[in-house]
Length: 397
Ligand code: ADP
Image (tube, rainbow, N blue to C red; front, side):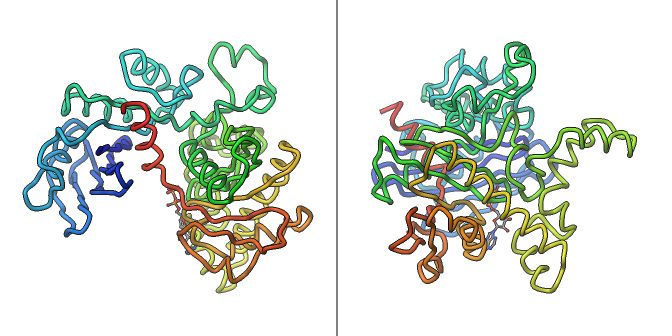
């Protein structure tokens, strides 16, 4: 059974064709600059040379057709006919309060994706375009929506409601949703399997630390709390996002700089985080290099990033009245042993002990805590595409 996984952004389309018999990636690729001049397809078939094509892509329909052509090409293709694709799984950002479980797309699902355009203005329209493009290119095949907000929908009211007048939740769905849900679902599940934990009761904290960063607490794989909110801006300090801050900061900067709220929100999303704090870069490797050269603000940005993660781990341990395992994932979490160690240095009170030799690892499943650590600490690479493919298989088999 082969499943195509599609992740559409406003001007991009990422895809992976996965053979579910052995969960291997047969081909993957990316369409860039859709709807903009200079559109380009990069297609990487497993075990063959990379293929690049510059060709106009006025919309996602044209892009998906070029992907279909690449997948079936006699030289760089991997299938002889579209019939080999059983179903298509889509990453969809927002299902609002209506959908949390993955679902086969029908007209009602599309209506809800459309209704959530306001909640996910950059992603939901693109996600819908991707679904409609696949429907046009592969009529009759099932498309499955896997919601990035799905995992967070299990949070109890005390965790998801903001302390603002309740009418805003009732009228507009203003609540905490959480994002990176597919990653938190996948990694918390892996933590239970790889860590040999009790599937029903394991208390797991997942630290998804990449350019976007979020953290979740789950019991038996069910989300108790997660750090992103109505939008991905809340929570941890990120590459370019501020994470938590006093909302009065927005008003204060608006007044001082004669800017409007949208301007300042743009600053908080795109120019803040470790980029804004350090003035160096949003890339954690650049910041670590600047710190090594004695750049004080780079050092503070890294320290603040680590401190915020450690504070959330403390809060989530309290929320669950304990923690059995802490898992690190995504770009920083999978590759940066110094940051993992620095975060864990705050957790001695939980009995966390890191084994330096075991922590000297990148990009593969590993237990990095010492044998006598009271909490199991793990590195578990995330794989959102595989998680989407598994959900698609489950719903369409
Ligand atoms: P996103 O998917 O949110 O764009 P990723 O999960 O791909 O982000 O993570 C990207 C981040 O991972 C970059 O900021 C990069 O600096 C960081 N990263 C990758 N490798 C390393 C490394 N060896 N050390 C520190 N940071 C790293």
